[in-house]
Image (tube, rainbow, N blue to C red; front, side, top):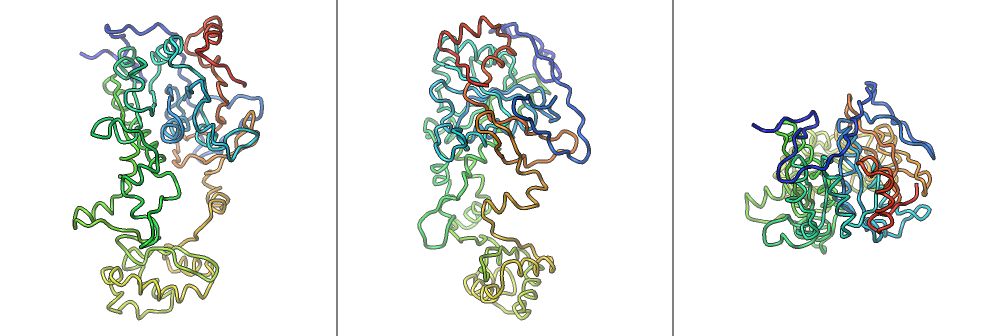
Length: 453
């Protein structure tokens, strides 16, 4: 029979292999009931703590984030937005490497670091120091999730790998984001987003036909890697609620990039041929791309026959419906260059706003090609609370991207700015059972750094 478990999925009994250090168990906060209208999150003011218990579904879940730069921190950020208490554990020499990204900075603070580490508390800990190692072990004893993105074997060499930590806490969900995965011939290789995109073929299908390979403008592998890791954590947490057991959750930048190729992989599996770049066009359907207008470009989605016929009417060429070159999707794909040329001969005569209004009226999916600034300032983006305001202790007023999933009964909330380096070291260790004298000794030994509030 398995050990009984508590409501959070933690085994009630310690294992005999390595007794769990006795720690006071913080009371899990009772989530506040949200209003049905998805209330706008309350924002903290300078010098105040965030508002009361988080209403999110992960309230009370403890997460230790040893990851840095992007993929791992995105995983931690998503869990934090959903209510988890995420403690970012940074290395003593400079902290998360994204703190060193010099530009842009806001009052000396790295904007890239701040945008990925909101809703977290931060401590600075030397894991190579015996005292730092003991601190992590004690924290793991009452943690639910650990996130790391070191190369394979790095934490094992420090005596802090999964085999050791799972003996301290068998319910621990140990989450790893690596370059290529922890097995296979590339299991020992490190990875970055650019390298993963090239490896997975994304750069061969991005850009204009006949041009050199192009990296998608955003960090596809890093961002998706973080999302996949968060998904894995939630799946493992459900499993733990059923069984009381933790496990390793693993994904990689390579897999996160390769997952983006579903349509292109389908073509290769069916034909043995690798698709190439099509600019803004679609690999399976036409017309489905950006078209030149009198003042820029407009995206038009004619992904099915009904929409294609509506497009013909809007553009004033109903005869295209029966033109053998364009009558069905197979013909349109075979004659794509001619199709684009004829459509743009019409769309180039009027501004983008005209065509968007015309396509909207006809029920054809269409939209502008925004700059990042135009997108972030659009009323629809504001209405969906995808831009939030925060007050950082050093940077002052800052903005961040909102949470892209809306839950009616247990909403995400963003109310804490990214931590300054070592900002919460004393506060967090106190919650994990360390008294003031122990914290002072760790600071004096160099195992811990205390930052500014």
